[in-house]
Image (cartoon, rainbow, N blue to C red; front, side, top):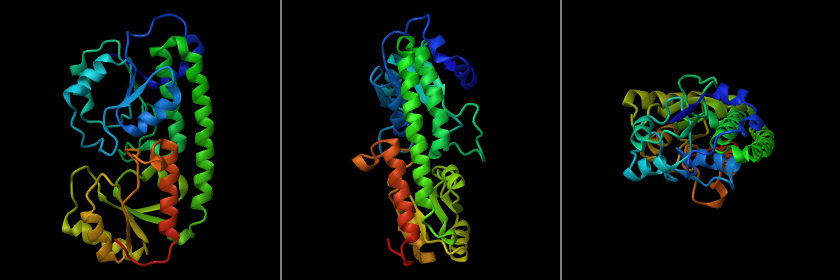
Length: 294
């Protein structure tokens, strides 16, 4: 396999990368999760088909690779991973694939990972860094189409800039004192930091590790003291703890945010749509009249 260091990839101009070396056999592009697959597809389509190892609606953090995933990587020429400790199961899968020609793009390599939180793609400006790394990796895996990948990356960058400006305008509608969230899944750190939302607490700080009764009671207290309007969760996780917290704090629940995975419906079927849907959902929850609902 050929791991692609981010800095080396970005220092190599895509036009230079288009010279010399044939693509490593057949195969296409594989991303570890559907959110990354969407971003990757925007850069490499139509030259490379993109698939996701983790199915839509499943958790990348709790994923258990299957034999067919090893076969998929064996046939692929490009693998796009988030890195930063998100895909703890990936190394063994790569080793089992035995594909020495596989180009691997680590999207967070060289980026400022804060508080050991790997969810940088939830900030559209960090997503632009992902796009640059993906375009560089695709150019090395398929030099013949390097210029197309560079142009696709520029187009998608413009869309990400538009998304960033749109999110800022939407969040500005929320009264400053209401820009607070409690979330189930610790995926919202970078989004909240970028757009001026205060994350008051996280229900499940580590995948699969439920909070203690003391920790849950502390979240209830924080929700009341900070006048939190809602607790937010994703559909792939059990709503039990979120609903318990909401009842105790007398706040509403929002159980349909998307982050690690896009959704099956058109409104959340790709990264850009997902981010717009999430933002609209957050703004609605934080601007509605108070009052709990489940």
